[in-house]
Image (cartoon, rainbow, N blue to C red):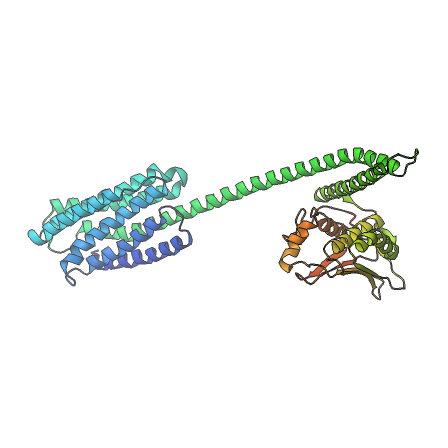
Length: 476
């Protein structure tokens, strides 16, 4: 059966341009993949070069012969350089430019000086064959060791094309002179038939190689992330253990300092003499108590992070707990001339809560409200009871407020609002996160409604009956 060479070339053109489009799309998604850009350009040049050859006798010889052959050389050299780049080796575009220049001179001489079609076919086929074998060698030398069978298959396809080109060159040299580029000789038929099948498959093989490398990079990144996550967890556990140990070790001497300073300031063993001694004892007791509270809070936060924070909930009336918390914060409010109002309606109110934990939550929230409310402002706490007897405690202030985008961040340990006023009032950024953890431990909810400069409202809703969860870890 005699195959029409022009038809085979036309099919090759369409396949080359279609594959070029596919490579360009993949390259646009993965521009950092080495070699992919070379293959995208090479695929396009292959289609354009073959299209130029297909238009022989319809367009000037400069484009259909000289430029077309140069584009085909540049195309195969582009695949070669792309393979080198994919393997992490330097490209050889200078050598490519020399080969293209030599091809231009030889083809031009055999076109415009002696018009020898046979020589053009033999020389062009030899050059294309040599570069195809270079592609095969580069694939075996490098990518075959990393991506395996896909690279070997692509190398074999380039080798098949190179062999048919070499056969075409030999047949043109040793056989009768050819008068037509599209003469249906056996060598031409075999070459273009193999080229139609092998070239697109070889390019697809290069794409598969890129996809395999991308998959391996993703797997390596995931493995690195897993290692980093594991190390971060280990560091977090180590930090929590250290803080828990440090907190425990510091509480013992602090209790002694607080106890002895209290003994001294109350003069239980007799007058201390100079009045300043009693004043100093007051300062020591106050500072020690504050430091002990801070250490206790750190210890509670580390327990929450380690999943070991425990509560002992019982069915309680929250009103006495609210009154107790207000009494403890009353003096701080009076010192800043802040009006502190309490609304505790009559009726049955029962919440399932740990009294100590609930008091700690209220103290933290009331302390923040007073701390961040300017002098002369107002802080209110009210208890709301719905028809089912579910209690909701609402604490409102007229303070500096919180920007809505900062609220999630401030629920994390050690976070503070980046404001000058908040910095002036100190704080560790542990109170609110601990409150969130304690409320969730009760299976309740804590919500914050605030706008910068317009005050803050915090609502705590506790369940009216026992919930199964009484131990929990940190939950952001």
